[in-house]
Length: 106
Image (cartoon, rainbow, N blue to C red; front, side, top):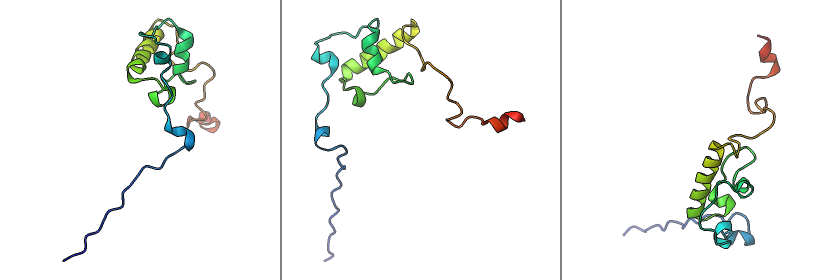
């Protein structure tokens, strides 16, 4: 009879350390807010990165329900020009693989 091999059990390595085990509480559930308001720009700015992207639940700590409301509110605020679509400031196209100065001569 052939000997059966046991596969090693693969577990995900824990990144972080002792503090990474607990999730952040949802800021809206903690304050018992039912609906996310698109006019509340100061609270919505916490959910938008410096480049203008909506941050994920993993980063913000929002629950599934409120994260979808935040995404909808950010999109609505962008449409009404309360929030910018992209980051403000100079163009960084040279850093991210744009044309260099020597290519502009041609």
